[in-house]
Length: 545
Ligand code: NOJ
Image (cartoon, rainbow, N blue to C red; front, top):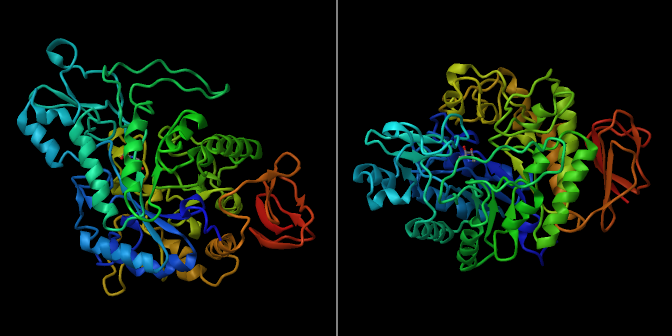
């Protein structure tokens, strides 16, 4: 099936947060060797491709998103040869490989930044980054009022008096995309990895590369809480000029055989703005964060689905759907709050409310069936298939996310969704490291994670893992699923019901009352027991109809 359309229009892509997936060399940190050893698991799970978080040489100030050399793999994870072997081996398992690329910034240890520091103010070396004199007496004030996404000002001052821009940590200076060297080097990096067989790239901060050359202060905030969403021309986010870069990147991808593809991490104010990234001649796909951010509410979800599909259809691009990633609280825990408000990234990493994981798990099971039935592709974050919750009680002494320090210890950051996976056994590291070298994992795993391990869930028909395995098998076999269209069916408020042709219906009950399933010939899969044709609250079913 799907043989006439490119694979990425329907793909289920599994996100590997490499330092937490599987440790092959026994140092407590996941690596390429560990990932290779688990390829049979991923094939059996039934995913089409892996998006792998940055594996490049890095001082790890931001979990590898501070890249010192894009043509080297960090020794923590392996070597370029290991990466080549992984790519070849994954292909033999029928799994494609999509690494991350991080074009907005480098590490402060990158040779370009080190050269810029050494060369001093006014030098050509500094032009590859964004250096400026300060404002105010003695230039002691930052050049403008931009803020770092991790907290604090987006500028750091050097001993020679100049300031440099970093929209993230000070160890991540922003590149200057007005500079031809930056364009040329990234095109060469793309070719370096494409020629080693990667099938595409996930583009980090794809919406941030181009800054207003005047570097003006931020515009006043428009309060759009209750009104329609609108776009504000921003000095550094989602500027129109960014698309020219991706048109060139698309040509680079098209130089290579096979369907290579890009997925943009682009945060845009409106679905129209997001769709601009995936116009013909631009990128192939973009993450649909509106789906991840939606509340657990039928009306909100339906609006997000409709808006996304309409905008993407207008430019001929497929939708992608995602519930969790390494930057947000795991959805089992988000949904464990009675009322799930719209998720606001960066502003609220720890939503309030009592945590009812039983409720969160029921909703997460239903959400998985919803997501995997929608037209387009889908992203799974490692551990989604195990129903892992956020680890909300990590001791402060172990926190590593720069957000913890940069927020002045007010925001615990993203480590709670990055805890190493439990594979087997009843005590840490739960098979994360080799049996003969059971190192302490880089973040501690909860003592009860043996219950959620791959081993514990395998063969248990009621487990999250078996739900995902069955759903992915059905999705592969059923011609109605993946790329295509959908039609809403009549349903009371609180229930989402839609048809995919030929012969498939998905029903999700987000209400507080049981819902009688529409006419069907059989139940293909349900997220919980269906008795007397009634779908319980927080459950979903796939029907042949
Ligand atoms: C987005 C990545 O997903 C996140 O983990 C990282 O901290 C920032 N970009 C900066 O690279």
